[in-house]
Length: 180
Image (cartoon, one colour):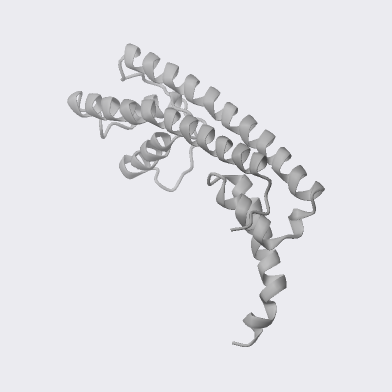
């Protein structure tokens, strides 16, 4: 197979993918473990269906994590205000153990720092890859765009390349689509 993307650029993109996916997984593991611990605590303390207790936990979780969204939807299942959207979680009563909340806060802070690292990694890689594709003229090459998008993780960078790929594909194969 004849590669259009330079080997060093391909290797750099694959390294970015590896690093990105490792950091992403490293972020998920503590949250996954924490969610099990928190759910167990809430059930043992008979707080699983307590609105204030759920708000206690939600208020310290990072909004970007899956567990935050899970508890947010659970909160709406148990609340009498299921049609309201709560943007500012203000807890009036703290029912969850302070040590557990501190642990959640520590994990949340680490998670948010890693989110920032992911965004910086993504921004840097996107800049480098787009500059490479544009400077070499490969931005207009269907196969080169396809090669590059196959090297990358599922993130905005790949979304940009997917969009470009389909633009080029339709430009090259538009006649085939019109025949149907």
